[in-house]
Length: 80
View 1 (tube, rainbow, N blue to C red):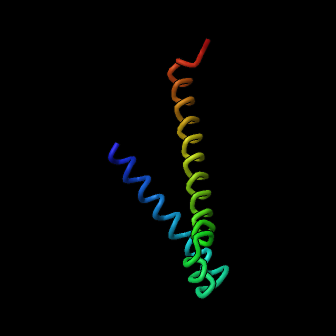
View 2 (cartoon, rainbow, N blue to C red; view 1 turned 30 degrees about the vertical axis):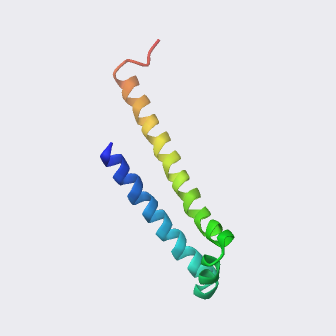
């Protein structure tokens, strides 16, 4: 459980850093700073990192699920 918490924290940090870097490059530092002073701006800044995090989690879920299915078929557990 501790590994998964640490992995999620690192993943959240990485997606947040990527999002801030990307938004800063798109809108510029001055506009980014003014967005950080506004509540709606903060929410808009957080949105891309949340979407990226959700996409990574969903992709990992489906990959791990596919691996589990392949292992169960290989072991003969999935046959009727």
